[in-house]
Length: 227
Image (cartoon, rainbow, N blue to C red):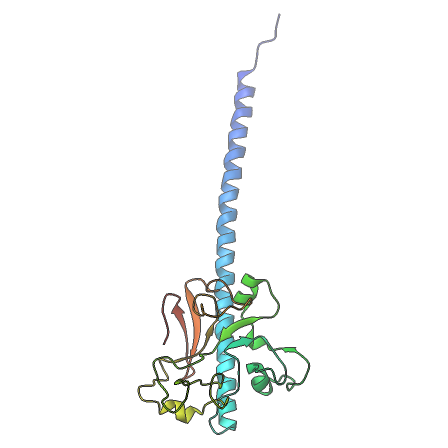
């Protein structure tokens, strides 16, 4: 004669399995929430560090201009390297003394203020180009220049020399609060440039960090086209 089955044990086992599946699902949801929150926190921290970088860049540029009769550092390439060395058109070569870094020579050195942590995370590169400066002041025509443009850091100027802030401020219609000086560098806001170090899209998501000519900094919507 077969022993009677114990339905209560079977039910308890089935109930335990359901509980386990529910627990696993809950853990998965919580993990996703925690991971999402962590990524958001890291993103905000990277954006804040980038703003700090631009502040350091702005202060150094202002100090350089103050020591050089208002002249901006240059000649500098428009896409800004995170490294610097002598005779390489590197912004860092001009600003290194203001960051207590070794003076530019033939050795390639890192300039931490020129490295955006979000760019580093996205591109998975230890050196590159995170920021850029305007090749010309958009919306303004320089009739005295054969190229017809104002190139503040000298790249593209007929004489290759950077401009003085006093001259820039006298350009009719120029507003230091509206004209950008340095901003995040990606393939969307600099689409005509083909550089491997360019991020494919804004590294801070829906905004770009921007330093203006009055040295204030804004997180500007990525959809905004700056003149």
